Length: 266
Image 1: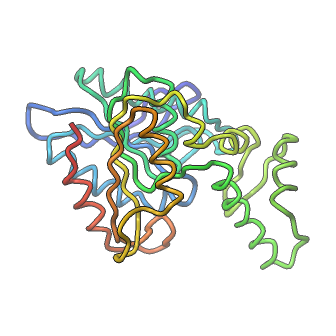
Image 2: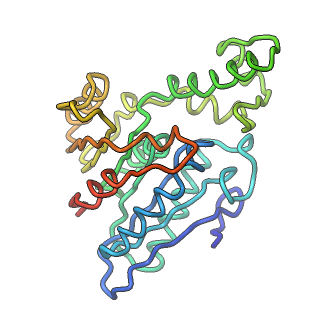
């Protein structure tokens, strides 16, 4: 189905429980660019599980992504905020219940940022492998273009040069996606450490790790500690499923699904 977003129609999939009594709504915010395509089946599998548990689950494609209207180069972080709220409002029009934001990778950072700006609306967040620093993430995205240029024996570019072009109003193609300067700047300026307005949230954080790991990496733990210092409750769960957002083929992510389904979201 399509919802009327602020900038155009946004595509959404709704997974509705068969039972009469719905526990809450869950709105899924997807990862970025090709990561979205790689993870579509995984998000749908988890959404079906949520529906079987009594949760209404809505998966949205923000404007300029997936099957929604618009192009990625026309997108902005502010616009994606509005699209997320369009999904939230649609859910509450069906039945007025609490809404849990569920995000994967960059979608998890969007969920955190949205909750920080609307502290009275979202008390629970579910994060899958969240991006914690937008600048680092964007650099990784731009490096894909560096690799492409090298493979095609074309003149090289640095990430700094690409950022300058984006800031100057140019669009650049990265791994088959045309990125615009507005969204690039938005992502560049975002980090979990900068979300000082986020407080009082119940955060369920799932992080990929090796089987031998006893806890999250020091970098992740530092971010978690900051969130806790802001009076948020953060429960970190490690999983050993493959990093499906990096893989072109399907992989067995049953452990991620099982651990997610075992979390007490309410």
